[in-house]
Image (cartoon, rainbow, N blue to C red):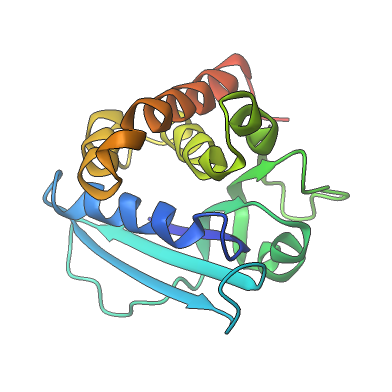
Length: 180
């Protein structure tokens, strides 16, 4: 499975990909590779991370044809949507991204991640909302493994609110009976 996460620096995009990769490799014993790219700006510049998960050895570490795209900004969508395969799953922050057309018949999963994160106290938790949404639409990595990876890779003082954000993301996507 090929997963691409994209947005702006400061949104936790790289951390989201890292958590997915650790979940697959450390907690589920699968092969996984994570690559990342970001501009020279600490915050606000474009960034993305790709994660490939497999039961077999991975020959090439870069995402070429994403099965899932998690996107948290319009420029990221505009740049990376073409890399989402026909029929792929698009999870996007409906507060920040507008999908005007669906040329490849993607499964669309809009979620107001930023809005939910602000309701929980800080916009910095939007990536965990997106991660929860991801866990609701795929069984490639279990919810339990993702939560273990969150606990292992984020400060203990933030665990409670990160888990709440993750759970809210799952709940929002599970309300969607079928993708739009």
